Length: 432
Image 1 (cartoon, rainbow, N blue to C red):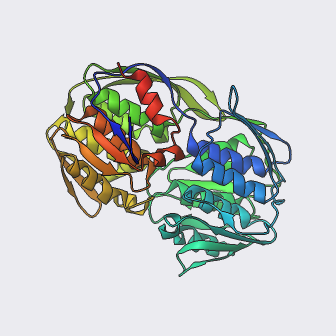
Image 2: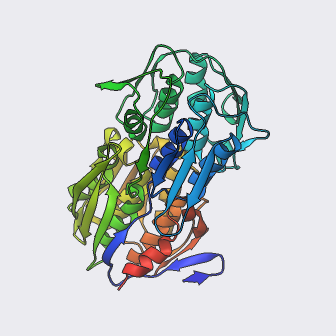
């Protein structure tokens, strides 16, 4: 229930039912961007309309793309793009709001357009490192500048793009995607080598759009093209949103949930694999594949857990769910260690430090390293916390409240609207 500026999540008896989670944010954003580069209209079925995706759509509209949103009945979008090189230089600054994905991917796309494009965002986004795309794009001959060489605002003056062979310093789906998208405008082949496999939604959608792309071990190569052809995109449910319900059902006694239509891309299943390794009663089944993206159902029920060690090589596949692994570890038998999570310090907030502070503030026992988390078993008592404007932390607090002894008041809970509009209502529907 609501209490002033906070939302209070009280201990739940059990969670039961069937749930359809919101559409995948990452896939929606990529669908909007690639559809904007097509010459023929593209229908996007089941897009997510929330903070980050609206930021992406608004920037594309400012560059001359027509997007018709349908929210009644089955959500959809009809995107009338401007072709591969037809985006228009906007009159003002392009506002990415809080979306690093939108800023990084669109800056790369604008490298192949004519004109000047300036990107900015909110205070949080202005603190996130953009040199990760500035450096490889400059290698490709792109005229791009950043504040202090590292932060937004970014200014891109489109023109000739040169092919490159670039090895990512750290695994990052956003940086990988930015280089591959810029490579669409080069004459020769562009190759990105990644130290660990990261989300591959961009690669799958580029293949669906007819782009010559192939992978050999850790290297992904894309060829420049003259056009994209993407007739329709069907967006599956977001695994990262489903993960919060999975976590809740795993640790709230007597729970059992069926999650329907969830995206089951192998690069997004790290959290489910870890839950299973901890002893969680969880299974998933692929039922269909559209635009090279598998989707299906997830079944989860309460089960006793044991501690787990998560290696750095696993983290790219569960980077958005690290907080949930730490929460589950509070209820497991034995210590848990999560390594290689330094990337969390560069999210909407220093998410790594925040996870530790939040769980300890609610009665947990957590040690935060420079790039690691160690969790000692200690079921949460409850209390209050701030989301720090981070949607993942807001939902983490909600799940913690359901499993705690006394409940949790989450201040700034509205941050979850970025990814999961109506999350509190969805929880209420399955609480018995």
